Amino acid sequence: EKFQTPEFKTLRNALIARLSAQVQELNRSAFNVHQHLDLVDWYRNPDHYRKLKLADVNQVKKELAPLIQPPKDELTAVRFDSLMYGMELDVLNDGNGGRGLRDLKKKVASLLQDSLDIPEVANQKKLLEKCVDDQYLSSLSIWDMEEIRKGLRYLMKYIVKDEVRIYETDYRDTLQDMEIRQPSLPSLELDTYKERMRKYIKAHENEGCILKLKENQPFTYRDYQELQKALWEEAGTKADYEAEYADRPLGEFVRSITGLDQKAAKEIFAKYIDEAELDSEQIEFVNEIIDYLVINGTMNIQVLQQSPFTDRGGIFALFGKEQGKWMKIKKGIEEVNSRAKPFDA
View 1 (cartoon, rainbow, N blue to C red):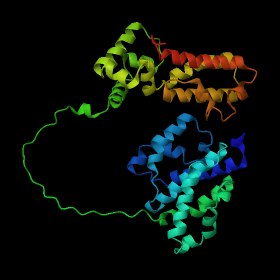
View 2 (view 1 turned 45 degrees about the vertical axis):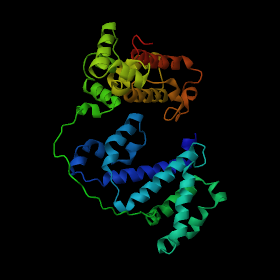
View 3 (view 1 turned 90 degrees about the vertical axis):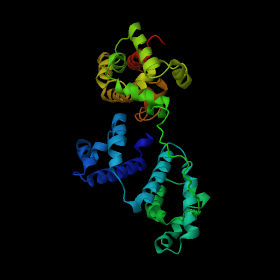
View 4 (view 1 turned 120 degrees about the vertical axis):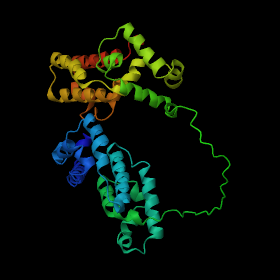
C-alpha cells in the first residue's frame, strides 16, 4: 500500500520522465548505442518503465545504463540526485533517511561555510540553513526532499574539496640490469580462483553436465562425477574449492553462475500454474519468481519476503486462504533447488 501513495507515484513519474528523456537523447548512430538499438528504442517510451520485472531491471543496469553519460559539469548533480533518491526510498520503507542525512548536512555545511559569496549559492541560503537544522531534518517528507534535491543539485559543483598536497621528488634511476626476463607464472594464475571458476563455467555452460544443470535436467551419478572432474581437475582442485566455498553443493554453485534456462523455468511452473488455476496477479508473482531464477539459478524462500515479491502484498495477501495454490508454486521452487543439488542434498 505504501507504494501506491501520491508521494511514491510522484517520485516514480519523475524518475521515469528523466530516464526516458535521457534515452531519447542518445545518439542512435553511435557505435556503442547501435549495438543496443532494440533496447534503446523500447525504453524511449516512458510507459515501458511502469511494469519492470527483475530481469528487465538487471538488463537495464547491464546494457542501457552504461550508455547514458551525464555532462561533466553535471556529475556532482547526478551524485546528489542519487543521495536524495536513496533517502526518499528509505522514507518510503518507513525509515528516516538513514546515513544520507549525515552526508546531506556535511555537503550543506560546506556550501554555507565556503561558497555563500557565489550568487547561485546565496539565492538558496534559506534552504541551506534549513538543511542543517536537526529539527527540520527529523521530519522530512518526500516533498521536502524533492525540494532540497531540485534546489541544491546544481550547487554541488561549488563544494570546496580538501586541499591536495603536492610533493616534489628528485630520484635518480640507476640501471643495473638490462636482462629481459619472462614472467615466471602463467597468466592464468593472475586471475583469482573465483574468477577462473566463473570463466570456466561460462565457457562450458552449453555443454555436458553444466548444460544439464542450467536446463534443470535430471542428473545421474555419472554426470555428477563428470562435474567433479571438470571443477576439481580441469578448472582447479578440490582443496581450492573447499577453501573458497566450504561444503557448498557443486551444482548450486554452477547454477549461481549460469542461472536457470528461461524456457526450462517456464516449463516447470507452467504445470503448477495450470493445476492451481491462478489469477492474473498470482501469475505475475510467479513470473517474478521465474525472472529471479533465470538470473540466480536457485531461490531461498526467504527472498520472497523482500521487494519486488512484497510489492503486491506478499504471499499471504496474494494467496490468502488459497494456500493450496501457494504450495504448488512452492513445490516448483523446491524442484528447481533440488535439481541444483544432485547427490548433495
